[in-house]
Length: 104
Image (spheres, rainbow, N blue to C red):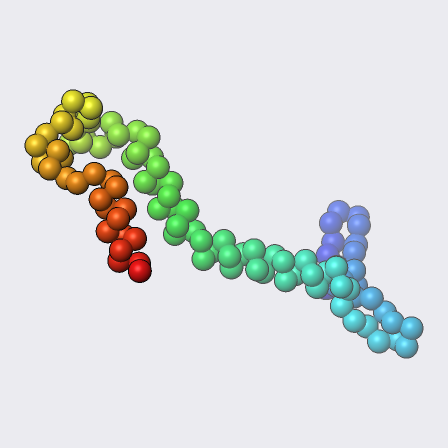
């Protein structure tokens, strides 16, 4: 395949092949490596694109909550956590003892 660019004419296929001493042509190792690298990179990017879009969209709403029209932003104060429901929960040491007992 000959590529013409202005006055320069190059044969791009000849650059990716090398001629051995017996006259046979084989693919250049670097060109083969780069071909595989580009192909793997392309399919990996296509595979991960939905996760990247989901991450970007969710980060936009976390960082710019005012973009949601009906979203009410409120603060959570520490004194709001002092309730009888939370006071009735056992201490963390009790939970730790239960976990250790379940593992034995």
